[in-house]
Length: 179
Image 1: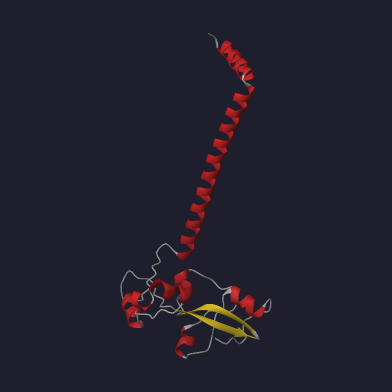
Image 2 (image 1 turned 90 degrees about the vertical axis):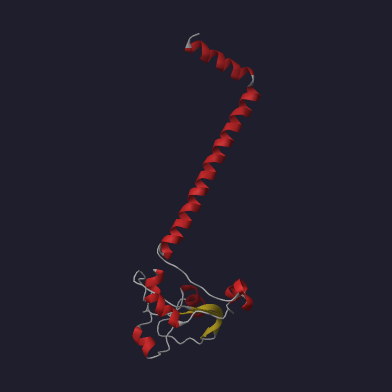
């Protein structure tokens, strides 16, 4: 049998069974579309996770400590945990030769007020190395410095959401905030 004869038989068969042929084609189209959609969603999720890890830094290690008797994960979630790590622990970790930077952070859930506006927010008590360790940058103003820490200056760095909630479109740099 020649190729042309085979094609003629196939086309006659398709037209003889139009409903079956249409349903078969529809099934193939839906199946291929579903596979393409799932692969696209998977690649998108992979890109989102990769982006998150790249922002955090591939060589970043978070160390959190709290006792499960004192609230465990619920204490972490609601900002009521009692820290069991000390600044001496951070200094000891900093002495490890392969450690580039240490930034001890203390987090609490508090009310922040400015100009009659209030917002409940998580505050991070951090060191001047915070931006370096987390690979963040500031939109405006300056970050706390070693001098600010040494002289115990009353300074605060606001996240963009808190700054917008408290000050709207006004520039928050130089404004007073009550924590």
